[in-house]
Amino acid sequence: MDEMLKPFEVKMEKTLANLKEEYAVIRAGRANPQILNKITVSYYGTETPLQQVASISVPEARMLQIQPWDRSLIKEIEKAINKSDIGINPNNDGQVIRLIFPELNEERRKELSKDIRKKGEEAKVAVRNIRRDAMDKLKKAEKAGELTEDDLEQNEDDAQKLTDDFVKKIDEAIAEKTKEIMKV
Image (cartoon, rainbow, N blue to C red; front, top):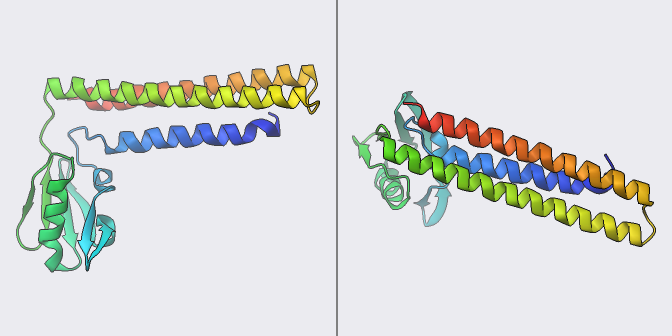
């Protein structure tokens, strides 16, 4: 592959990584500490990521346990979780906070799988836009005399293969997450 396509490959990899990050936050009825990644807690007046003020563990398949390093933060952590959109009410015993994940019903599973497909389609559109940008850059390089017609054709083929490869990876990520959500 030509060096001209390298930056576009990097952008496509970032698109795929971003999609996988979004999928990690979608809960599948099992406890996954990553759903807490975007939660911040007011710690001495500063918004601080939850992972920096507490340890998070998974004692059971459907339970997360949050152990604050400073017990005075329990109320703040509870408030932050309630404010977030994870849809789970925290329980605390004065020492730790427990998040118990309910089983997903059929309707919710179908809703989540639609959301998964929608995010996947958005990622595919982003990859195709990156391909279009690559094609534009290649055509400009050919007009400027930096590429021969044969090199242009070869690079366009490479850009298409790269796009097809990433679209396939996105389809695999969609299928994997959908399977995870639909599993009872």
